[in-house]
Image (cartoon, rainbow, N blue to C red; front, side, top):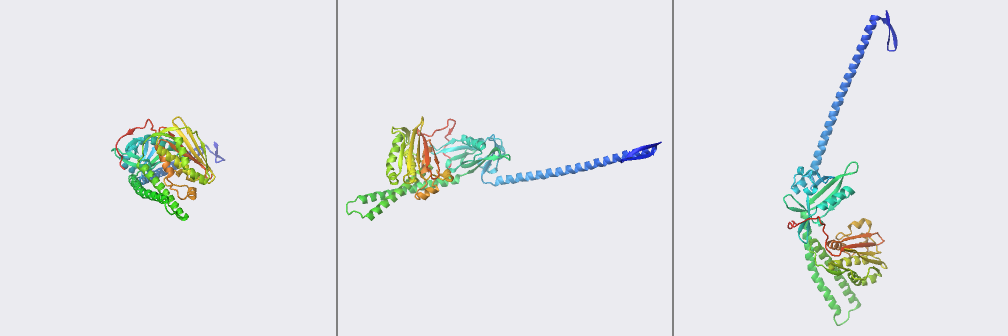
Length: 447
């Protein structure tokens, strides 16, 4: 009997025996093809596995290379570097930081920053060291929440206490650690030992103080001699001679003012503040200074508007310092206001403080220069244009005096539209201390 078989789309008519053999052959052929496909897949999987292994090995080698390169870079940097997570715990510390802090980098990992870097501040008046852990906490909060960059400079008198108890002066910067997503994942704390800079800075301050004292005496003598010369009976001076004497007196006053400023700066930097407190009528101090500066205002046709009560407003503070603060702000306002301008002096009494402001209609401070206005010897570009003779010390001295009395000074300014300076001072005139701050009288830190 014949059988009809479909193969490859065609119908075949073959015998029954042959049909059985044909089916077996087809089945075996299919098995062979499946086996070949399985072998091909196995070879392909093995090749893929080898490729993946090679890729992983190359990636691991690249990661190890990058890690070693990063460690080499961190070890060669001259500053101490500490990387922190969002818990303020140490993630990484380079060898330089470990050497400066006398702490092994591996042992520091996982510890809080303040347990690794014990930050203290030198109080110049008492020569004692005061714990400043809250300073690091506040900086870390601003860095991680506001993506701000915080810094401490040489003049902040901050020290790091090492594990052996010794200290060294430090300046540092703390910056946000940004992740790929743009979010802040921690902070980077970079610090350095400024012992040598501190020594040079104090030697410079001592030299300025000594030189200023030596210059002050002969200038005072010249000033007295000029006054005696003018008051001497006899032949009157000619107009030209009088002009020469007046010019010399003005030069002596200018030099004396510069020397006084330099002495104040050296006292500030050496911590030689006078600490006497007395009952001071602050309103009366304003009136006195306005009277003293009256001739300067009349020459420039500058008018003053007083926005305060003439009633006495007393505070227990340093008369001399408050007087210098008021004098500097008023004289600057007069100096940098065009003729025909106006000053507005405002005074307010609060519960524990008094707040006063000096507003002018002068040339203002350029926006790009406002962050430097309280720096030593810095003068705004337009200020140098209108008054080349300034020293750039007045506002520096003013700010340091305000802070020493426990107060705050700030300003608002727009170029060509005037400036207003604000000063808030406590009625007690003493620096306010946070209750949680601990004082450690551990002697004088190395300078």
